[in-house]
Length: 131
Length: 483
Image (tube, rainbow over all chains, first blue to last red; front, side, top):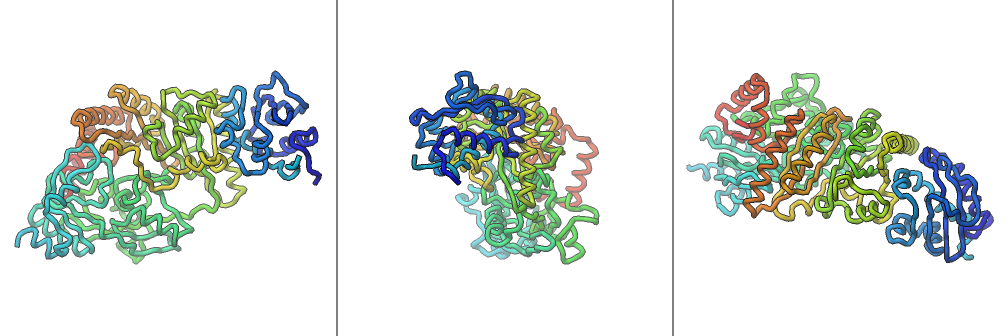
């Protein structure tokens, strides 16, 4: 399988596809209607999407200033999470990843959020770690 | 011969003492209940020795208090009338393991630490219900005193796991009750008249159990631990807990309203609190978090996943329909902190944080599950009145047919004022529980008296008749049942 650069348009599309075909995630996310930014400032990576009962819709490059949630962290940290060498929650606790937005809402959907993180981790098979 | 010489003749002089420095250890426990020195401590190793000691005590009208670990928090092993403390620690053998009929027969000194080792090394396909108690606690004592364990959500109080008992009566005769009275198998208490009840919940006043058969349960090959975290116990007790009971998807449910203080050395409460603060959640009662641990068990990965999905759905529905803020976590997915959250699931367990000031007492009770929240909230008010940090444990038992409500109360054992405060507070908690229709278990004598005060007089008379019938001279654990 062709390796894709973290946060590239194709990478983001594959991420959205995996979200939208993951039945576990979609079941956990029933009622999770929101919007996200994923932001990697040091690599100038940003894309956003709308979550409609968790389903990733309207995937776009760039930051959406009206997105309800923003997940933000340096490229190295995201790569470690994708490689599986750093636990996402440990990274959040150490403030290596920040989550901006009305967090109680996200906490109420922890199983869906956790599954989404697993989907990000599953991107290891197509992520090019050398660029 | 005097009593000491007679006891020496029965068990050997290495296992009898009347030396004050050795008796002192047996005179008290960690609770506020007043210490009383025994006259002798005796450590038998065989059933025949137990019979010999009991016959001697009965002949000379010497009170006997059975003892294994002394780790209960109800003053149950304090020898209220002096006499002999019968320390059963040396009787720790496994008498029988029967895999096909799923039981083991053990002596009273067999502990949860021994049982854990047995499961880890030999009986890997089975499990039993482990209490929130130290590893040196007795399996038999826990069962005959209506203790509970981590699997009590499914199986009920541990007395329900007893299949058969061998008991030395207060007059020295040896009897067996259950199928073992008729056949070589200790597998059931059915279909005979259930005489097990003569020795369960009587707080050691009707006989000394020398063998106990307990059920083993097949360990589900697939398991997953979950935590449901709430900032307000009402978010769980308004409806979710009843749905969890109704649908019977959890093998284990338990936890409680805890503070950092109460969970020291047990839960990573500071990290949890930090995480919760970071997530913008605020506890309804300052510094108190409702941590509810659940275990799902299944025969296959598919079944486990289906159960987890159902649990997620129930929690999501509660959040959306009741505007709750429940957080469902699977600790295994949460790195280092997740590992620490798993600590209390590795039972038995030491609880160092609770014993910092030397004293620990409780009001433990079985309440109608429908009254648990009322009891919790009223209990919080009582704690507030006495300026104490609450720790309220919960466990819906036997899929919700009743529930445990347990207030854990650490105190400074060297402070007379603290002891008095704790005594007064426990009295208020007991009255509150009784008013709600709950019943304390593993209770100190004064609580037993309060229960009898409220009981149907005919029930009390029946208890007294049974006690007199079995123990005509009143030597066994006098006072422990309120009379």
